[in-house]
Image (cartoon, rainbow, N blue to C red; front, side, top):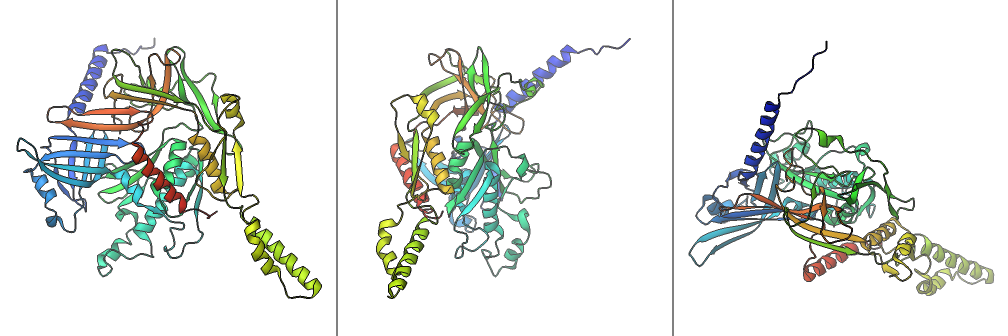
Length: 552
């Protein structure tokens, strides 16, 4: 007779209670905050802060702020600027529930309030800021004075292409044979440059080409910074840059990694579920709709193929599993009178233009072909009548008339979008980013223009950590972090029970002497920025575009 395995329900119950208590205790503990000098030497752990907050933004630089008493030893060290000569940079790390916020000092402020309390306020920029200070050369393997070809182009899966572009330029900064060490006469500097990646200040997580299932993209740059290079691509492919400092005692980022203490490891995480099952919404009555995203053979039209009978992920049935999968987000935040949703704002915008126009200069070869034809015709006529060649003169006179008149502009119209909008709609807009028609840059500009004018549903929700089954954390200690897809509902908006699925775009970890550590999340697009700041960003984008005009 076969024996039947019995279950000790008391032991299982006690194990569950123990895990919940451990999780609760860990979340109430103060974050481990440490300060480091410019060489990543530990200067001390912070225990006497008045208040602190650390913001993480999706593919943008977050801000960290910490307020310390002026007489605290780390305050005295930070304000002793001359005493830190040679190592003036100050770095900070904040470890909490598996997450690590790290950044560099941006501003140091000392003040005194009306009660006579003297404080030091330190403002840090998240390490994502480094991406804005790495220039993607046209050819990172040559010195800046010799750049051929004129444009860096990398075609492939978005994650792989962007990480390879970043790695090539980090190699240029860390190992290039064309640049000297900071102190050329110091033999140690030359030795450091020969030690390989184990002495780099920044590196990239490895990724096999065949393991990357993200959407294909064309990464191109002519001396733009990596933030500008990747900004539109990561938005279109729903990718998230995740920089994380490697510190002594951490497990290696990948098997066999041998990195220097303080090295910044870049990873590009795919939360989109592209070319796999993913959820775009649904309802609490019918369940989440699962589908595949796809792009048409023309490289411009994006569609969604609904899966009729999807299978529910097995991971959610595993005891102790923490995570949320794109194909079926395990977190649904329900809006109501008594829920964890603190604030919510839902906004829908229909698509605008059904067509995009771009260009300005004729495609490569057109002007040259016309010029060659005119010169040949002029020389042939001159030869027939016995006069000196006049082809060059005729071409010089006619050039202003024919230059950039043929194949100089191109337009793409989305017929499906036009039919969805109805008989009356906005017709077309200008696609920025390319001034030469029928080139790769023009294709990118058209797709970017269609993405910019697409239909959007913005649902910004602020929710506290620990509610509605939400646990913010990394490394197996949470089911949510920046870029994670989460479902939300909104009362009195659309179909009853409708679930909207979007990514976490902002996380703020804050605490003080009177308040326990807590995360605040924003799901969906962040609120509209100040018009002046938005205008400055547009000017910055135009300068970035100007660097690439005429290169294709």
